Image (cartoon, rainbow, N blue to C red):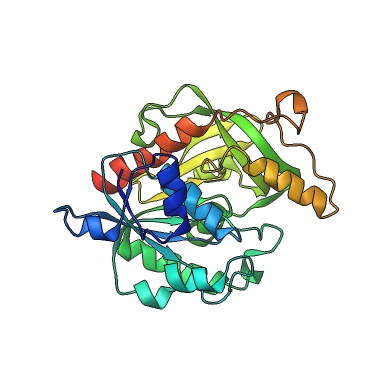
Length: 296
């Protein structure tokens, strides 16, 4: 899909090098198309990496997309240059009077904290409440999904015995739901988290449906029955080497992380992991955009 981004955004040159269809503002001005307006609240510390991952996954339909990047005002990223944030990111006051076709809220490395102890929790809940009336469909990722399930439905998170990290197989519970149209009966996706949610509680919560499960990683996808909220507990947007980078980062920090499951060939971290989840990651984002944003 033509993604409408500034040609000075670092992700633009990366995507262009990968033959991803992205168009600049100048070209968009000459096209008689109303693009889908997608807001991305990026809570990840590695904002440039996350921008590129998400834009890559939003790149596979003929729809034109206008991306607005959003950061919290309460907490300023310490891992992203101020110049980048000033150039490409808005804060909530900049967008509160606008409406968007879709919104993505990313994960964040704050899983060990109680929700209410996260310093931008009040700002986040304000944005989530605002999205109900101002965004047609919102896609929540990992901790973002846990935060939304807690805020809107009172579904709490549980601390896992150890970090869940690796590539896990999943199955579809209801293949008739458009979000998983075209999925294989078994597919793979990355997870990287210390907490989870109880699929049984989610399934018993009025208005929610559990759509995909993993024997080892638990619930992967849930959604509201009207499709206005999508909850994805893993990270299908991750690149081939993201789990490797996290694993090596933890080792460099003096931690003793377990090796990501089902990731390195022969559990040898010197070998390049196969990219076996990319197609379904693209399909998940494409189905969300098509059936829950554009078609609706």
